[in-house]
Image 1 (cartoon, one colour):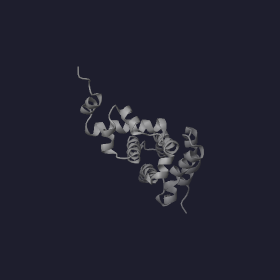
Image 2: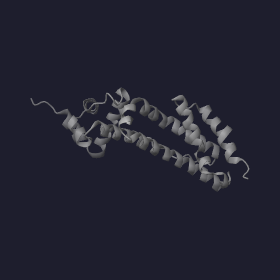
Image 3: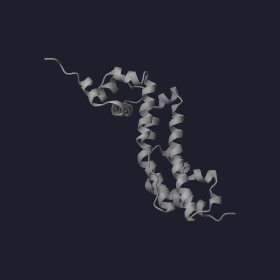
Image 4: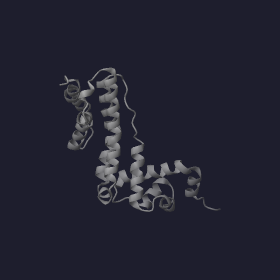
Length: 201
């Protein structure tokens, strides 16, 4: 009786984008489990129920595989922009989304892929991409508030526009953990909203 080729059967079932997503899901999980230093093609192939050759055809070296896995994980956390019609609720909602969906990945990237970041320039790219999306949502929220007449557009200097994200990032960098919800509310209520609603000179 001819033994079954489990790898081959799996690849027939999973083709194209579906196959690549399953490979990158497996690679990301291995990165979380063992870190970049201990990442191997053998471990990822086993986790994905495939062969090393399938991985090597797509990512010839470990940094290539790690980079693709990180990008895949970040794309999986694309966040909608809150739109409640209320400035406070939208700002708190945006930071809460980041806190719940993005911060875990950010902390894992720092703790598990430190040596990888030392070998490549990718950390700056990943950080910049995440920051750009977060800033875009905050800017959208602020622009909507201007359209509603909630805030004076003269107050929206580049530094003020960055304030919500900067406060949030500073807290994460200080604690290396997700930000408590009451701290997010305090950032908005005690700092951001007073700045945004103060009289313009």
